[in-house]
Image 1 (tube, rainbow, N blue to C red):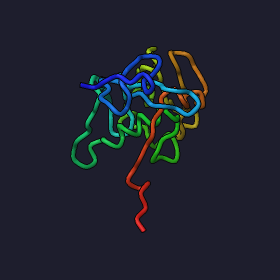
Image 2 (tube, rainbow, N blue to C red; image 1 turned 90 degrees about the vertical axis):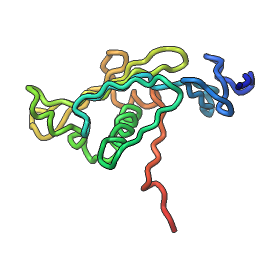
Image 3 (cartoon, helix red, strand yellow; image 1 turned 30 degrees about the horizontal axis):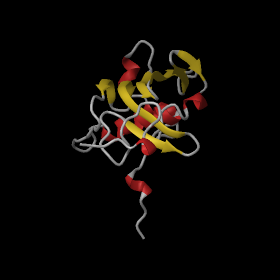
Image 4 (cartoon, rainbow, N blue to C red; image 1 turned 90 degrees about the horizontal axis):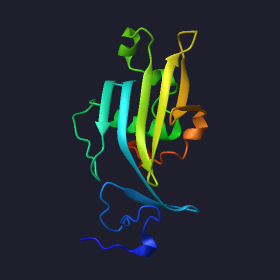
Amino acid sequence: NAKKSNSKNCLSCSCFSLRSFAPSRLCVKIYGAGWVCMYLAHLSLAHFRNYRALELDFDGPLTLLQGANAQGKTNLLEAIYFLATSKPVHALSEREVVDWQASLEPIPYSRVAAHVIADGRGLDLEILLTPREDGANFKKQVRINGVNRRAMDLVGQLRAVLFLPEDIRLV
C-alpha cells in the first residue's frame, strides 16, 4: 500500500507522489508551477500516418505498446507529441503525416484529437489538416475545447517528452 505524503502530492487532486503508486494519474512537479496532475484519457486518429481510424481509451495507470516492426507504435507516440507541440516529429511538413488513404475521401484530411484531464478539468485538443488550394500542402487548424486557436496555444496544454533511439549517441 502506498502512503500519502502531503509535501510531495499534487495540490489539486491529492494523488500519490511519483515515489509511490499513482493509479490512473501522473503528477509531475513543474518548475515554478508546483505539482500538476495530468493524464491522457482518450486519443482519436483519422488518416494519421498508418492509422486510417483509431479510438483509444487510456483506462489504467500504465499503457504498454507492443507489436512487430512497422505496425504503428512510434506513429502513436508521434500523434501524442504532435498534439503537445503542433509539430510532427519525423516529417518535414504536415503533408507527410497524412495517410495515403485520405486521398480516397471526398476532402482529404488528417485529424488527431485527445481528451486530457489536467488538474481535475477536462480539455479537448484537436489538430485538423486539410488540403490547401494548391493541392500539394495542408493547412493546420488547431482547436482547444472546440475553439479555433493558434498552433502555439497547444504548447503546455498536454505536457509530453519524446525520447527516441536516435537521441542516444554512442561514442
